[in-house]
View (cartoon, rainbow, N blue to C red):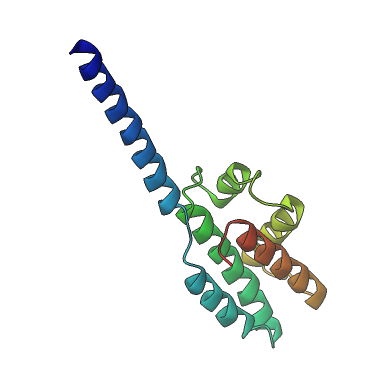
Amino acid sequence: MTFFLLGVIIFGVAALAVVSRLAKSRAKTLDQQYFQGQWMELLARVKTPEGMMLAVIDADKLLDEALKRRRLKGKTMGERLVSAQRLISDNDAVWYAHKLRNRLVHEPNVRLKKKEARNALEGFRQGLRDLGAF
């Protein structure tokens, strides 16, 4: 009888661990349709210099949203990017894009070149792919 009760307890604990693990992994999946729709909206703005700036800023926000939904640790986006290092295939491209966004937001006379915007958007897009947003 004691072995039976011990077996039931061990089975129950193992079942709870499996259910808990599955619940966590499901919460980390991203709504690809949502992120693709948001991405298409921000790309529609790239036709003007101001639109390029807004697209880079919005792409940064979108990547941060994906990081948060994946429940990566950190109070700031930079901290969340550090937490996501192993998930992102090209950390340098994502950091370049994020730093460019910071310059656009915090430095008043920054002129954005098309090539810079293109590189930043490609970095953000790859980061979103790596996180499962696309």
